[in-house]
Each structure stands twice: as C-alpha cells, then as structure tokens.
Image (cartoon, rainbow, N blue to C red):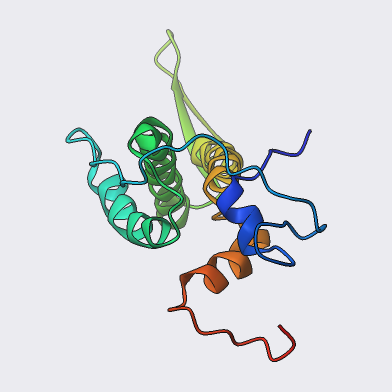
Length: 159
C-alpha cells in the first residue's frame, strides 16, 4: 500500500528547521484554508460524538482541522463507534458463538462458529488506521503531535 502524504502542518512539526520537513526539504504550505474546526454533525452516534469531542481540541490546537474536514472526521468517529461496539460484543460473548439451526423436520442442531463481531472489529480497526493517518493520530505520528501541542516550550536541548 502506498504511503499517504502527510499534511504540511505535520511535516513542519517533525521538520529540521523553520519551513522544512525531516529531510530538510522546503514544505509547501498548500492552499490557505481557514483553520477553523468543523461543527460536529447532529446525527453522530453517542460514541462517535464522544470521540469527536476527544480529538477535535487537540487537532485544532495544531491547526490541522478545517471546516472541509467534517465528513472525513465524522467517518473516523463513526468507524471508532463501530470498533467499540464490536469489541464490546466480543468481550461480552467471546470469540465464538453457538449457532442454532432449526430444520424442517423439527430437529435442532447447534454448532460453534466464529463471532461475526471479531471480523467487524478487525475491519473497523483497519479503517481507523487509515483515517487516523489522515489526521496524524497514528502511533507513528504521536510524537509529532505532542511536540506541536505544547505551549511553545522547546524540550530539545540540541535544537
């Protein structure tokens, strides 16, 4: 899978110098979008709305959000909600479930099958990684986010 291009703000956070990325290349700031966080859609599920409230303040402090990011951020938050629901189901019912089949002759058979929530959680997790990379929320960009979120204090004695 090809690497997704990082937003200019993330490139600058991990950069070597003012206006340069980690490879020393000049970063094109891109179009001048108004950097205002989008309003949460009213239709978000409860868990998705909670995730929205959790991530938007941090992304806003880093100037990574614009109003046009609403759909992508909503998709990320709803995917998180699906992941949480599926994971809760697996925790409650286990990795396997008993499937009951009623036959036409009146007999009943039971067999153990994989819990469908396992596949749902796995697929949602894959989607989450893709969405998280778009906003710099993946573990590989965590350090860049934390460096950009401080109040201008430089913890690097070699900078």
